[in-house]
Amino acid sequence: MYVVTGGEMHQIDRYTMEQIGLSEEMLMENAGQVFKEKLLSLIQANEKIIVFIGAGNNGGDGFVISRLLLERGCDVKVWVIPSENRIRGTACKHKDIYKKCGYSFQHWQGKEGLAEKDLSKATLVVDALLGTGIEGPLKEPYGEVISLINSAKKRVISVDIPSGIPNGGDEESRGILASETYTLQAPKLSAFTFPSAENYGQLHVLDIGIPSRSFQKAGIKRELITAHTVKDTLPVREMNSHKGKAGKALVIAGSESMPGAAVLTANACLRAGAGLLSLAIPQSIQTIVASQSTESTFIVLENTKGSISPNAFSDAISFNNFHGVAIGPGLGRANSYPLFKTLQPYSGLVVIDADGLYHLSQELPLWRSEQRQGATIITPHPGEMAMLTALSVAEVEQNRFEVSKSFAKTYQMYVVLKGPYTIITTPEGHQYVNTTGNASLAKGGSGDVLTGIILGFLLQHKSIQDALCNAVYVHGITADRLMENLDTFSVVATDLIDTLPIVLRSARY
Ligand SMILES: NC(=O)C1=CN([C@@H]2O[C@H](COP(=O)(O)OP(=O)(O)OC[C@H]3O[C@@H](n4cnc5c(N)ncnc54)[C@H](O)[C@@H]3O)[C@@H](O)[C@H]2O)[C@H](O)CC1
Ligand SMILES: [K+]
Image (cartoon, rainbow, N blue to C red; front, side, top):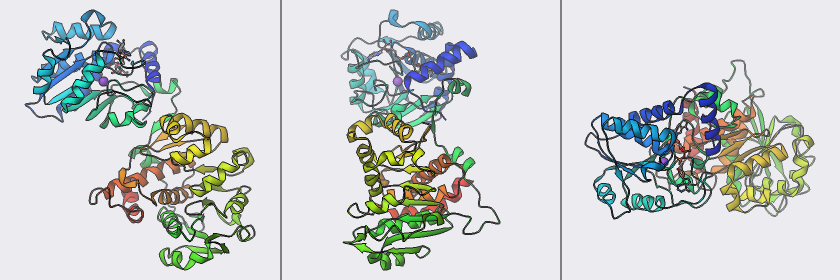
């Protein structure tokens, strides 16, 4: 499933109409039909529905939805915000069809009019005020209508997008606070960009019949990770596999103040399929780490002031014995730069996280793909991305898609930008958005687990992007699964590792 900007959606609509020959009237009718079906499956028989309609095609969808619900005998009040002569094109055609079927509507005349009364009696609001055609700051009377709807605190279902949110989704908005949004054909960027993502409520995607060819022709390179894509791309372990063939992983992690990071990364990596796992850790934490990661083997390094000594590293490890390396969780920044540097010439996969990203920010050009034989995968949270790009955290948050794309293309790396909707970007600029996971992941250690799963999966998959997509998806699902029995406050990173085997099993079937 593709993820698009408002502008791309218009381009896709145009191709569908002009080149494929599906008319806008038909697409609008389809939108109304699927919306109505979805709505009827979720509402009570005695629901009192109020529909708010704007001037553009989002309002046109509102006319189709109102007609179809009235045809089904639903109790529907329809309020149209612009004067009738402002409704043009396809929306006007569907307004006329609505009227010719014998149905009427009320005109908005300010909030003191009857709309407020109808709203107070309604049990459900359908928001068909504004869609992807919004430009610039919200104009009146839409601001006033939206404030009225929001303050009524009803169940609100938005058509396509919550009305009033900016197209990029990145600016402060006075948009509708929807309980649910039924988006048409493809989720829009604003559903995954804060603060607008918070306006959406629960997101459902409705197939209105726009062919995938229209998306391909528009060159859309953003997709959603779904249960289907994961199931189709999760590899199966061959019968004649052996531990060496299943991937030899090296994790360089941990320090006296953060020994747990090494444990979490190693154990997650093993649970994600690594055949053999070596942990490179400072000598002073070896006993404690070994007691909690039974299956790991160890490369014990000299330590200085609680972390790996700057002198100990270069000849202690032969990187080429490993298929992939993860570096960074709990490493500490003070002494580990020389160690980080020795990894650059290594020809295998390198996953860089946490303190490893700090070192990377000091010598970024050296890690461009043409300077390395193996692929580099980075797993920053927005703060670390800000450090790597010299932007503010707010700038990263507001332009998550663009910032990660530009970084991935410039440095030819795979970027896993973590957050409520983690975005994976390939060096070619293809992007994959993850929707699994929940607020319980906002806790120390969950990133270490993800790094471990990523390394484990990289060693099982042929395609790096599939490995990354599948890793972030299952990581999120483990948290979702834990929510069946636990509270968001209570989940700890070890729970994620313990749940991973069950989640992996069900992701396959
Ligand atoms: N995706 C599809 O294939 C289909 C989508 N449909 C729906 O069409 C809308 C997009 O329609 P469009 O006419 O382009 O725009 P809007 O309805 O969002 O609104 C345009 C309308 O709003 C006025 N306006 C613009 N900016 C502002 C502002 N800042 N404040 C107030 N008013 C503003 C402008 O003057 C216009 O009158 C899409 O979201 C879907 O819901 C179709 O059903 C066909 C298939
Ligand atoms: K809307």
